[in-house]
Length: 396
Image (tube, rainbow, N blue to C red):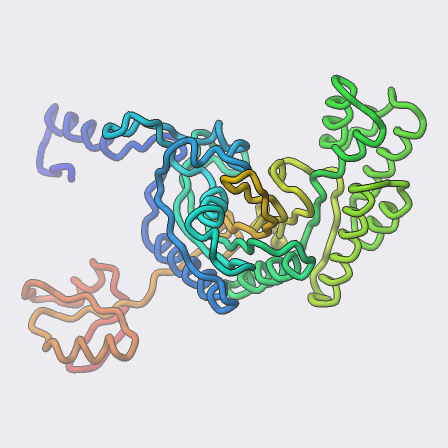
């Protein structure tokens, strides 16, 4: 604390020292009241919903050996991880940038023999080397679930419905769902035998929604990819256009699966607006099937993101999984600013039994530690909304 009784040059030195100590690295922040309490309450609300559906909470460490975090889907997060050397083993370690990677590690190692489907829930801080335009902060809380070991559409329906329920439970009333099929573009490129620079230009054009970037393709390929772009929109329209594509093999099966899942979602959640963007792949790079994102009306960015992916086992086998993550910084922006809770000031000398009684009734109390001539002023100074006077709780 700066000594406010120091004057002249010494006061300036003290002020500069305080400023240096208060300065945090870019992308990091102190979470103060009442927002810190709001964040903790949101985490409790989300996790309680996860647990009510039979998901078991796990808590992996913040730091792991680097090679453990760079397996499978972890490769897509490599540039986002802080790294440091373990002084004991001289092995490189990394700070987690995404907890989904750790869930995959647990499922393939310590929980490899657990009954399937395996349901895991988690929450914790993640750190990233750089922020983004939508998320400039580099440390934030992630919460979510993973359902491992079931390839069924019912598994995808379960996690999507759970994400909607969990967000509704913490106050998000109006949600919309956007479905993606990240592997589809690559599958279509294979079908049309597009390789090298041509393939890269097509994928970039589709990601940018640039129909002009498809002009150099032959007529059949251009027609298919243009229809893919046109399919982005409401689910019924999108599925109709996608079904008109003459897609074979895995691509055709993926489109058929998307149509069936859409019908199941609309049957289970008839009031949920559903759109499809078959060209969207940013952030879904490691997904092996259908992905999804949930948005709030008027919110900034997605509140939850998830989808199907593969868990790599040490023996080289892969296991189907699906899940989602909620990012608390974005969630808090979609909710009203929190208000400070009511506090009752207990003047110095208040009996402990009186404080116990008030807390049992749900009040938060602030105990006066010194006798003063004006306890009401102390209550106001400490930000209390009420004071206990003559055994009665009164507003200040």
